[in-house]
Image (tube, rainbow, N blue to C red; front, side, top):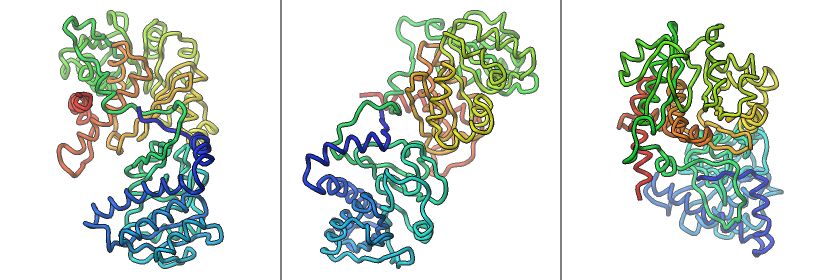
Length: 486
């Protein structure tokens, strides 16, 4: 797992090291790692290190000190280093002295000359900073026209929530010290590539994690020598309608491609589903569906009384159920349908559906302020697992456990992609995987399939449709499983 730690957890882990090590040793350890990343970036972008130019944007905190020490180390390697001090009175004294001692140039204020750098290092604020960049710093960052390497996190982005409430740095690379912070997943678009530098922290168990590709691949259900179509998981899909038959086609098809068991479809779009996926066992109603190990209910099914009757019947079973789309709208009006279930239940809302589930106004504000806390809150309140969709998908269990999936882009932001996601996760749940695990694994495969569809083997991406994404699910599973091969 890739673990994420809050600012408070990181500061607590740093405290014993700061007490045990000589003054400034931990900062120089971090700066050494930062120096290595900046030098590597210079080499890859310009072909060398010596003779290149780097400008440091230096605030008053320890991140500014990290940047200054790294600047001194780069200067010793022949880099022309210029530091712009936003608050010269509070700049890190030892780091500034080290830079000056090796011939680094120092400028002062937001109007300072940035020079003509090959790279800029953002050391404006660190994990103690909150809120957007202040106007002088924002004005300085706005003048930067070259790639930025952020020290620990991009300035102006909240370390624990990834929220930007105004001007903030958008980095090409972020160098994280000691531990990944939630910002590195929740605000990946601001962080760019994240490089983790080990500085020797003794960290607690993490409650916010991301499964690696190898872990997802290793756990993906594959048929064994004693398996048959029933033993590998039978998933029931209630999706689509006369008005929205495509939702049934996409959702059932995703379930077909995700695992090797059986898919039973129950709904009015049975002819359309069978025309695309003849291996599906399709009937026109829930009562005739037959035995399944998990249900997916909601995409395109409608929100009328008939749909509500079917939803009540599904949620009245003792089977795992994934609730999505129209079913979420119905549940928002009758929370008791899921709040009292003892069987595993997974809600998969996007932001708008999440607001309907939790109430308007303040719920929307809570979601905007902290997606992880809001998702945890809903999971705990309703006693269900919750998957909040987005570029960084957040999956929470009622006990507070959280798994994240940063998609690496927004290729999946297209109509019908959620129907595909539901089918994949529902199929995984039918194999016996817990909702939290199935949701995180499905989200990983789904985002990878979207990226594969967008790229199609090319270095240039193109917009995709949900059907194109669906067509890459098996390829995504192959990629994930290949990562698990020793």
